[in-house]
Image (cartoon, rainbow over all chains, first blue to last red; front, side, top):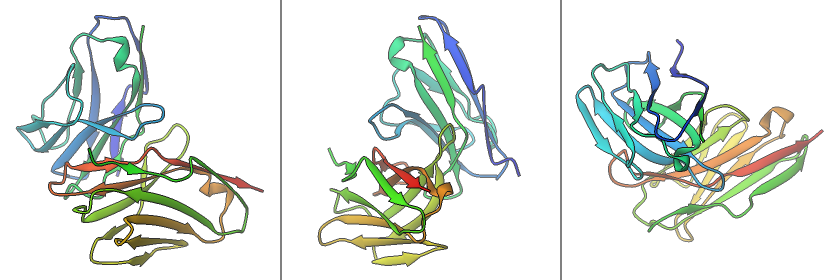
Length: 111
Length: 112
């Protein structure tokens, strides 16, 4: 099993550009989530989904959109990138929302 | 709001010694606790978990201790190896499964 796969690994954007971070899992997990990781701070929840067609906001949702059309995929969209969105982004999945399996992360820089 | 914190940002130990990483939590309603390991350039990896109805749980070379009286969580690593060098996060969960709060992490450095 590949587990949780995130693409791209690195991305540089200019302020105002949009992009989509991809996340896919092959463990048939119902629960998927996106986190951002900033220096000196714990992982913070952006959005999460408890199944196909169901999404909800986490702690820091502003500036991000998500959708969940299939169990496997959970893309994160940045609508208009801002320097404050420079961070490392992690996608995670779980069968019961507890023990999370994380992807390898996307390092995003917004200039 | 409620938060999870760590006592030591960096811990250096000699190879072969035991390591103890500590975590303080403030939400008495938390019912599930997890330790994750994050190596440089990688995503966090689950190590061990414990529920609030337990005070100790052992895995392979790792033990988690939970003291609800003082709201303290610790991760013990026996016979620390160079491969254990990483950042370790604790996390607490309360209520719904999206309500997980992560600590800022402790960096463990193993000295050969």
